[in-house]
Each structure stands twice: as structure tokens, then as C-alpha cells.
View 1 (spheres, rainbow, N blue to C red):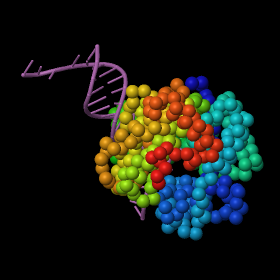
View 2 (view 1 turned 60 degrees about the horizontal axis):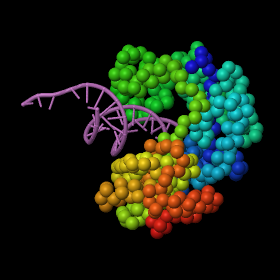
View 3 (view 1 turned 135 degrees about the vertical axis):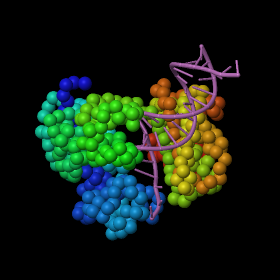
View 4 (view 1 turned 90 degrees about the vertical axis):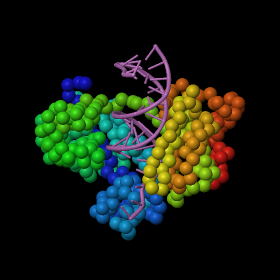
Length: 380
DNA sequence: TCTGGGGTCCTAGGACCC
DNA sequence: TCTGGGGTCCTAGGACCC
């Protein structure tokens, strides 16, 4: 890694909610909550800062949000619009550096070495405000995680800077849970060792880190001391593709569940073929009414990508479970991906399925994924 | 109060092979 | 009767992130 890098994190403020407020002036200044419909099993995707005043947060059950803020404006997400705005946002970033790494729809890292990160961050914030009518928060630092944390501490509509000189001061009083990769479980363990802040972390003996946290301990040590060499902008191939669905009411009807499995298999297959992957491992995920969640996986002799091949494996796995317990969520996944294009189908006598499958995919691409279904998926 | 959907990475144990 | 060590692949679960 070069001696000193200049990294910027751009993070759109309350992204989905902000776009809704931009496009609907009557929503401005009001608590806007984008996510599931109130009264359903679902969560908040994003909410405006007005809604946060009531305690509403991302990922909160929508029913809880509704209790906290019954007069809020509840909206379903409009991903098509958000994707377009996202694309425009990253195009603006690309005017300033070719090294742009989107990490999600509303957030991305830039490497602008050796330019002045603060002045570029200012320009990008300005340009996004002017042309897209929304605000972003930027963080500037010499490494990724500190750029991220700098932004985090300056939300919304802010700009934070962490230099090598002030990195340890910046970290000192921050709770360990603000470090990337340190979630509730790790916070709990750290607390038991008397560690609450990033400053506390630095008082621990070096050997303690690996002893307590294994491989992650080494990373934790580096995070405590402002060290992070992770590069920006390295493309990584997908490792898995999956689809899952939670039912409004727990389901026990096996025929119905199998039909859902078929639909999920089709959706996974479609995405696999679309990105020219095939998969050697197919897995299912089942969540029961008490939230117990199990996964079952099956590795096949050869990679697959056709709907019936995926469905057959998923169905086999499901039937082996033999439990009549009510099901809350069902999922199908494909992993062990390889790049060698579309695999030879094992079922339905080879070639014919291939052709049919291509025709179906073309239709799905054109009209959306609901147009055509595999036999078992049609029954609703 | 009831907990989405899409991912990544890590760990641990068992099977199997040399 | 007691009994290796290493490597790889696979499965299942868990923590975490957006």
C-alpha cells in the first residue's frame, strides 16, 4: 500500500426518505417512513430525520414504528427511482476519480490520492445537492474505516475529516461498537473485559487481542490504532446468490411451500444465468414460527444454473426435513459459483430446456419476473 | 414489540485421503 | 492394544453489514 492515501466516503442522508421528500414537497419537514406496509411483517428501510425524533430507526419492525409514530407518512420503496438517483450520484463521484467503489445503493468509497480530499468532498457534496436535490455526508481520511467513521460522526449533511495526526484522539472516546465489524455480541464481550471505548482498547496488551478474538483480534488491534490497508475499488466476484421470502402468516401446507420453493428457485436461476454464473451448491433456508432458523445445503457433482436443477435440489433438501412445523420464511440460495457460463442442464433431456429457459429469461427481462412460472410455482 | 432481504466472512466438526 | 498428522471438502451456524 502506498505511503499515504486520500480516501473519501460518500453516504447519502436518509436516502430513500430524502428522495421521497424531494419528489413530493408535501412530505418535506414530516416524518417519512419508507418500508413495509404498517400492519404487516416487515421492517423500516429508511426514515427521515423527522421520523427519527420519534425513535423510529432503520430495520425496526414496522409495527413498532407505527406505534412510535402513528401519524407518520408510510411509503413503499420505489427501487427503480432510487437506483437511478444512485447511478447519478456515483457518476458525479466518477468525475473526480476513476476509483469509485459503491458499497450499497447509497454509499461508496473514493480513492482520490494524492489530491486534496477535503476540497473534493466539498465539491461532490455541492454538486450532488445542486443536481440531485439531496444531501450527502462525506468522511475524509487516510484509510477506509476512518473515512467511514468520520462521516458517521457528522451526519447528516456534514463533512468529517480524520488525519493521521488526530486519528487516536478521534477514536479515544468513541464506543467500540462504532468500529466496523464490532456488533452487539462483540461489544458485550469487550464490556466483560472492561473495554468500553476505542481508547480503552488501546490499553490492552497486544497478545490479548488474538487470544480473545482469534483472527478478528488482529483486525481489532489495528482498528484501535488507526491502521487499515484495505484498498478501494477492487472488484470482487459474487460468492452467492439467494432469494427468500417471509410469509404474512406462518405456513404449514407442504404443497404451497414446495410451490414457493419453485418460485424462489426460478428467481435464483434467472439471476444466475443473467450474470453467467453456475452453482455447485444449492441451499435452502427455513425459519419457523419461533424464529429458529436452519439452513441445509447440498453440493452437486456438477455446476447447475437451470430452474429445474436448482428446484430439484431445493426440494430434496426440504423434503428431508420432514417437520410439519409452521414456516415463517423460506429461502433458496446458490453458492460455489463458477464463471463458465450457463451449465448444461441435467434434467428434461438437455438441450430443449436450455432453449426454453432462454426464451423465458428473455420474457422475464422484458416484462418482469412474474410473467412465467415453473409448473410447481403456478399454484398459489 | 416481534423481528426483511441480500450479502460476506469465520469457525468448528466430520468425512475422507495419503 | 493403541493408535500419527496433515490436507481438503463439505455442512451448519453465527456475527455482522447495508
